[in-house]
Image (tube, rainbow, N blue to C red; front, side):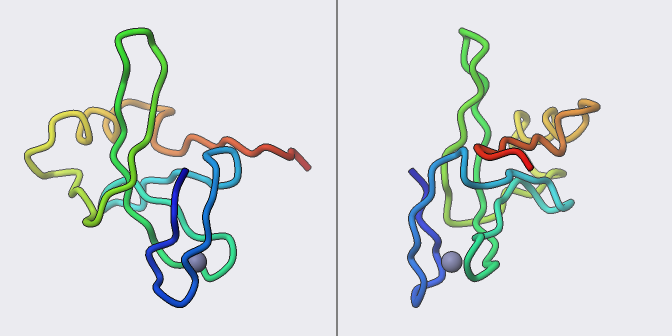
Length: 87
Ligand SMILES: [Zn+2]
């Protein structure tokens, strides 16, 4: 469950409702209602399942977080799109 950090909005989303994107400053999703940017951290599980955790601050791709940098550097992982309702 993700919660929009825009205080007047505070909408709640499932992963299937949002797009996780890397806009160059770190992974984030934009709230489908208000468009606020909500930073997330990617976790690659040992079982191969990728999970995302909402965070308060954008994690810079060039920062100390190795996982974030690797995610950004790997082709095809920068724009993972997971829509629950394909058009
Ligand atoms: Zn919002």
